[in-house]
Each structure stands twice: as structure tokens, then as C-alpha cells.
Length: 92
Image 1 (cartoon, rainbow, N blue to C red):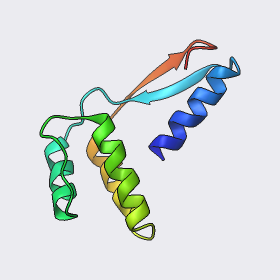
Image 2 (cartoon, rainbow, N blue to C red):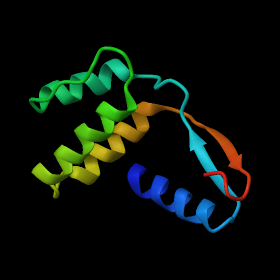
Image 3 (tube, one colour):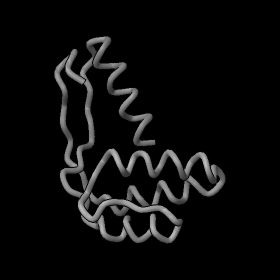
């Protein structure tokens, strides 16, 4: 879902449509996300790392597509509240 949102935002921005994004500055419960990854035999850095999180989610989706929606929802909830950011047309 996170990847799809980014793709859509880039596409719409490229077409010069205004884009609204949800931005999470620092995950509220990163340590719990790290624990979930460890429970699944994966590792994430101690400090929040969006690239590492994205790679983890991509691996889990490929490894267990049936359970991935539950994992994805859990991660989104643990990321916490975001703020809204509106990109100008052409700036995605």
C-alpha cells in the first residue's frame, strides 16, 4: 500500500495534478516494528530507516502473500499519525 501510494503520487505529480501525501516524520513505535521483523526472522536497524522497512515489507509480501495484508496493517498502525503535505503540480 505504501509503495502504491508513492507510485500514484509520482504519476499524478508527473501529469501536473496536485498531490496530497501523508508524511510520517518519525515512527512512533519503531522498536515494535523491529520486534515484529525479528519474530519473522528478519532484522531492521535500531533507528528508523524507510528503505530498510520498504525492503522488509517487499520480502514479506513475496514470502507470505496471504498474511501480508495483516502485517502491512500492523506496520501502518505502528508508524503512527502522519501529517498532510500538498505538493504543487509537477512536484511529487
